[in-house]
Structure formats: C-alpha cells, structure tokens
Length: 307
Image (cartoon, helix red, strand yellow):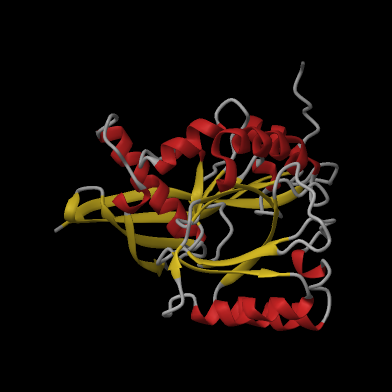
C-alpha cells in the first residue's frame, strides 16, 4: 500500500526533520485515567473544564508539570469503577498514586504535585504512554492506536493510551516514565524493540526526541551525547543516565546555546556542545493544515572536552 503523503507524519519523515529536541518540556507529569471523549486540550475535558481545571492549571505551571489523560486500550470503564491518577517526577522517579470518581477527588492531584518528593511518595512503576489523541491530529490515532494495542499484548499493565505529546508530525510518539524519555517515528515493526531496549539500558538514539525534564536545546545536546557514545562503543549499554546535562548558557546570537555535557569522555570529562535553533522550510505541521514555519535544535559545534 503506498504511503499517504498527505499525512503530516509522512511528510515530516520524508523531509527528515530532526527528532532531537522536540519532546514536550515538563519535569512532572500528571496522569489521569479518563475513558473519553477527550477535548483537544486535556484541561477543556470534563471534569477539568471549569474551576478544577483553573486550579490545576496554576499548579501545573508552578511545578513545571503537564497533564495527560490516559486510558487502557480496548477497555471500557464502568461508571462506578474507580479511575487511576498518578503524579510522576522524572528527576527523582518518585510518584504518588490515587483513584477518583468525582471532581472533588481530583483535588488530591493538586496536593500530590507539591508532595511528590515527600514522605508519601514511592518509586514510580514503569509506564509506556502512547499518544492516540486523534482529535488533535489524525496521525496520532492512525499510528498510535495500533502501536498501543500491539505493545499492550506484550507489556500488559505498563501500557496506556494518552492524550497529546506534541509534535503529531512525529507520530507514533510515546513517553516512557519514570525517566520522561519521549520517542518518535515509532511503528508497529519497531516500537516493542525500542521500548524493550530502553528498559534494558540500550537507548535507540535515532528514535529519541528527548528527556522532557530538559529544555529543547539541552534535549538535543543529550541526544547528541548518547549518539556519540553509540558511535564510539556500538555494543556497549547506553542508558539515559550515561549522559548528564550541566549548565545551559544562551549565546550571543539569537537561538544559540552552549550546553555542558557530562559522560561522553568518562566521569570527569565535560564537553561544551553548541546548539542552534534553526528555521525549517514551511510545511504542514498537522494533517490538512496549510504550511507553517517550524524550527529544530541542531548541534553545530563541540569544543574539546575539559577535565
């Protein structure tokens, strides 16, 4: 079957747009089980479309967090069945989990955002969240739902469908918690391989959009560091934590940054990686939309490592 070149994800792949540095940015993730339907924005979906959503929006901004609606593939919740919520901190791996039935129950989520690193937190279980948010873009549903179904057969309780992960032109997209690693351009042929490799500490760098707790330039520098490790030692493990990002400094030119990258040259070495925000040719960023401008973050230079 020929590719549908009218789809934004097909066009993005044909243009070979860089994936690195395109992950959504959030240190903490609020996950709320919700059977749907989902509005274009999670906070416009009942019961969030009102005072609760306004309170939660303030808390999300304060704690560098984002909300995702989640659901199990092929499972319809009964009206009286308790629904899961979980707050995950990607920096520490801590989480707080609860259940809800009414809008009032969800006020606990706001409290958990503030307390997720406190005495009531516990290590988050692994979660694989696949974007299937078709009302945002058809590619999310067309590519995401088959991936979620396939992964759930192998990984069972770890897998959830989720609302939008940004960048639908990079569909299929998935967020792996608690690390906060976002992957893109997944399909049914390679998604299970990518998730299994990630869980075993062997990052598939060419599918990695970035760690969500990092800003976009640092995401790009982090992916560069992992790719450099893979180039130097192709058979060695390269877990996310093998590379760490230190300071990120804005350069003199607009859209220029210098990131301190630790781990490429051993524990003591620090590489200074220059990252530039580069404009891309205008193209449809969503299915059926007119061409729009976009940008990517690209590593342009690397200074010799210092001890």
